[in-house]
Image 1 (cartoon, rainbow, N blue to C red):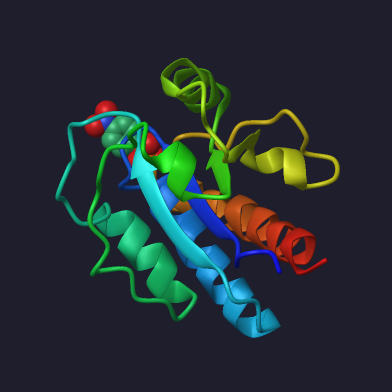
Image 2 (cartoon, rainbow, N blue to C red):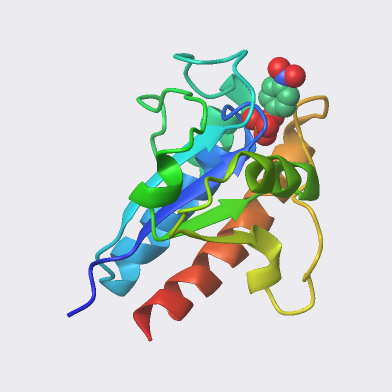
Length: 155
Ligand code: 4NP
């Protein structure tokens, strides 16, 4: 028997994109009856312990999801043995993750949008310097990816 999947979403600050990806994944996994653990983290350390950006909280709330209890943390080497899948939100996150991955890493590391047909190789753009429309686009992208990921993990 294979263990239940566990997925970690990683962006830069862990206050905008990856918390939304985690929320979207939890939502789609629950809808599909998929048992899977989910978490998110950042490659940077500026926001450790902080709740998500208020604009990310507002975007999640628009979809009926409360992420006010999420707290940012930094990704670490142990995550590569703890999770079955690690999803990088953009190419820089992916490069940083490859750099810190221990040689004994067991997690499968991929770019999040590689799981969405037609969006392969594309980054989820950082909405941090943007506005509410940018957060809405972030949600649309991570939600499509989360749905695709749930379908993949159900197989
Ligand atoms: P995130 O967005 O990586 O999607 O959480 C950012 C949040 C904060 C910063 C950069 C990106 N920052 O420079 O503080």
